Image (cartoon, rainbow, N blue to C red; front, side, top):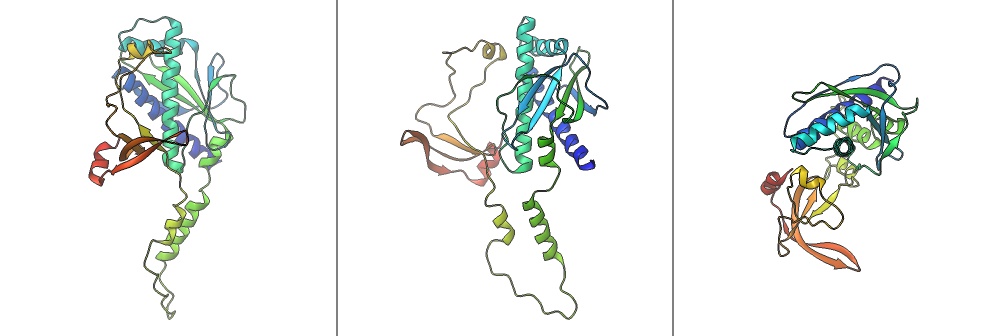
Length: 283
């Protein structure tokens, strides 16, 4: 039970941080965001959003607030962009901000689990069942606005992947602990290990890392983003002759040119980025 509480606390804390980052990026203001555990069931009148994740199988985060809070928070975001919007637009903006926060949680899980964790298709849902745990209240306060309370909860699959140490972590810890033990008195010294990579490196070779290719970027005011529709064209900051960037874990590691291999896109690497430049491109 204690481990479960620790996992739920970590998830709630990371989601709170992601909410703060999403709101700061959309409003230009750093909000006051904090969370606290909730005892007892969730109150009535909450509009819940069910967000599944790609790993582990069946992992879901539930997030919700009242309809009035959703409109107020989304309206504040639109107000910061200089847009006057209807309650429906404000509600849609709230969901967009929520999705950004939940995507950020996926990135935090990717970094912790060393396996890509991404949001899949979410949807509105009833209140989470009794199996969900770690109910947390996230309070957001923006300038000139009363505190807004959001709720979050996590299903057993999401809690479970964080409770036990993975077998690989246990093996690494055991190997490190054994290496630190001095030989017993009078015992012959163990033979010297052969030169080469440490044995524990074998445990890392199968770690999967997300690799993406960036064709370019663009910065648009929120009011222009809201106007995007099917057929809209967004101009990127890279010409067709410039190489594309290959990104691993949010760090540019190489540049290359786009090729087509048996009907699939690929990238031919032309340049490996130096360590110093990788640090400058880290996002």
